[in-house]
Amino acid sequence: MANPVTSIINPESKKETLLFTVAGEKRQLAMAIHSLDTEGPVYPYQDNGVSIGNIVVPGSLAAVVRRGLVTVYGFTIAIADVPKPTTVVTDTPPKVTTGDTKAVVTDPPPKGTTGDSKAVVVPADEKNKSTAAVGDDPLKPNIISQLIPFPNPVSSDEDPTTIYVGLAAVSDNNITWIYFIKQTSKGSNPTLREATITPGQTPDFAAFDISVNPLSRVAALYLPTTKERLVFFQHDSGEGVEKNAIQFLKIGKQGVHNIVTIIGTTEALVGTALAATFIEAPDGKYVVYLYYTSGNLELVRTINKDGAWSTPTVVSAQPQLLLSSQMTATHDAEHNHVFYIENSNPKKGYRNHRDPLDKEHGH
Image 1 (tube, one colour):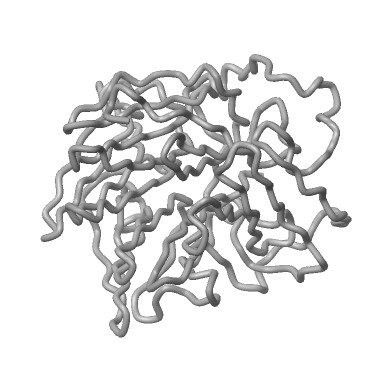
Image 2 (tube, rainbow, N blue to C red; image 1 turned 60 degrees about the horizontal axis):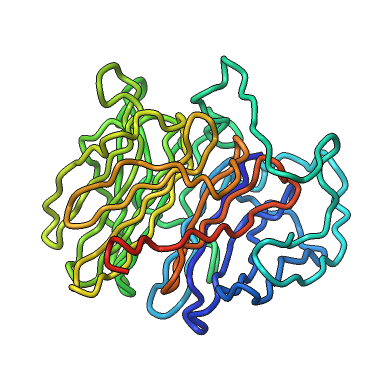
């Protein structure tokens, strides 16, 4: 089950990451709190008997701060279409742990493993291909919905549905932009879409003439000083030098946009998880970090400074990702905090992997 995930810095405590996932087969939004301090506590989600919800799994989540409130978006389906749980959920209160190298929930390692990070063997027919699917039922579109502070579809006037699972959102604390993937017409290639949500106004939907890989995830950033938005996605699977490459759409404050292909990313897993952060450098310019998964399930990083992307580099200090894991990231002054599920420890769920900021890029 490709568990959706998103994260955001706690607006009331800049030293905490709020990590949002979906509570197993309960299909309800779950939140854990991770301290950004190395030895700080982790407060995992605890199920006290929550009822069955209607969040789509596999799917995606996206979090923003909108008018001071943490707002999370995701995909939902009609309650009547929610599959019944196949197992009895018997959660027990997990222990609070400290430090990022410790497990959040003290489960034993998966049977047949020692808990150590080991190389993963991906079957030949599965290599370079994510297990991401298009929601619960490919024939039934998923509804793009606000999940908190209260559940509500993002629009009643325009069709806020899609059969694809890529989703991202950014906000300037007033206006929110949601990015997703949708077909223009039956049988057409899926393209990138944008929903603009302005308080007191009907959401505005726009389509970009950009073909996107059907399994693509989406990540997005809002750069407050330049008022630009960066939207990352995976190129469609056509032939050529850009096949499966990661691209990004740069949208200026007047809506002017251009597409850039990130050189060296064609070896990315098809349907790779995507996560991005940005740091404002001492010279006032932005340094952007992009994380994705290689075909061998390694964590890969590329950095943009002064408009140029560095050669993608495997973050060798970090363990491999589970094939079905998604990814999300926040940052503090010293590290990017990249959350994903480890291939060697799938039962531990999403864990914080600290990646030091690159000192050669102004930090």
